[in-house]
Amino acid sequence: MPLPQALGRARELELDLVEVADKASPPVCRIMDYGKYKYEAAQRTKESRKKSAHTSIKEMKYRPKIGTGDFDTKTKKVEGFLSEGHKVKVTIMFRGREVTHPELGRKILDNVAERVEEVGRVEVYPRLDGRNMVMVLGPEKKAKKPKPADATAGDAAPAEPV
Image 1 (cartoon, rainbow, N blue to C red):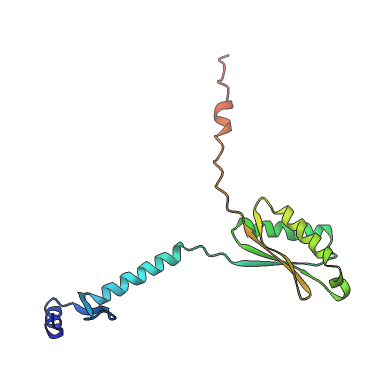
Image 2 (image 1 turned 90 degrees about the horizontal axis):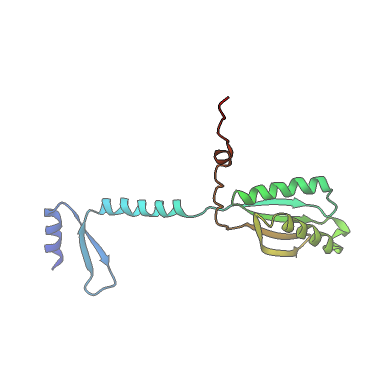
């Protein structure tokens, strides 16, 4: 229908005339409540953002000459991050001439990956990046384990009368 007639009809219904396909010949328009349409579109985008997974990257820094206690503490922290669903960037920082022995850093990163293999997996394998060696671990996507049945319910013996 012609534009003036469409505008008149939209005004009668107290709605808006909205162009939905501008590339078409002739242009396609629809009579609708534009404010309601914008609100519903905003709600749909908000809902889709809510459903998307937000993973952040945590970083843990190690040194080639790290002690066993410090190594264990940092590795437990990495396990915690992975179990919470975060990605973890593990960095070995080389100082001075330590960079000439990248196998030391590689050994530490392999130990970290081995320790956290139940909760995470290697996403980016170790590589030398300037004076740092970097590896990225991601959380493991496993099916949730079923909860064990209540053990105390079946083990309780009936009381004997005395």
